[in-house]
Image 1: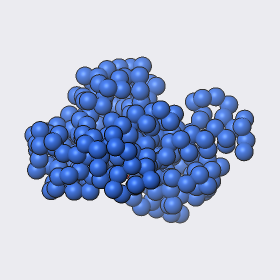
Image 2 (image 1 turned 90 degrees about the vertical axis):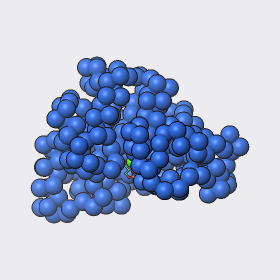
Image 3 (image 1 turned 180 degrees about the vertical axis):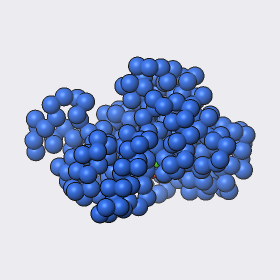
Image 4 (image 1 turned 90 degrees about the horizontal axis):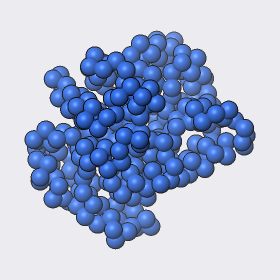
Length: 269
Ligand code: G3P
Ligand code: CA
């Protein structure tokens, strides 16, 4: 452990609470986000889906089945219908060791509700999912950020918002609407050798960083990304020994379902 590793706060790797503190509480619920914040996470990670009537909700899957009492596609249900669902009880069944009575009947939050509740002094790492060529999600997202004061100069400068996507065209559409928003390109698979150089060089043209599966990165890939001035944020890292190894290799942020473990690993690094 090297306690002196970070000369200042800005150099500290980011602690990104993946779907909130989703190892301990039902993902993408207010209670999960609150816990992530309480555990010292720098960012609340939010996945976005659009309801049938065009509301942005915090939700990972395209379908309701895994994490709610509903079923079928999110896009076939109105916000009112989704608000009637219990988004917490599944967690108690799946993770009895962390089950809590209070998780029962947790609701699916809208992006607006989250931003209203936590305010513009918090930091949000938001993922666009389900790309369409009309950029409906991206337009609504920017309107919501604007409404909550998160597109102000100082908020952008201090990276209160980072927008991430697996879809390059989603990020490019955001860049076209507002070129000052920090963007991170997610990769499900990353290249190796000269192809990795090419891929990272292309990403560098429109994004400030790259997010990848932690099992797909090694010391040399991380060095490559950092030499280009890119941030590198592996997901989803839940075991302390993996966190420590990635910190040794120089990652600039980590997505974790266990923000408390990650905070400890960062502090002790
Ligand atoms: O956003 C980083 C990571 O969350 C991407 O994968 O499927 O968990 O959204 P997923
Ligand atoms: Ca995500």
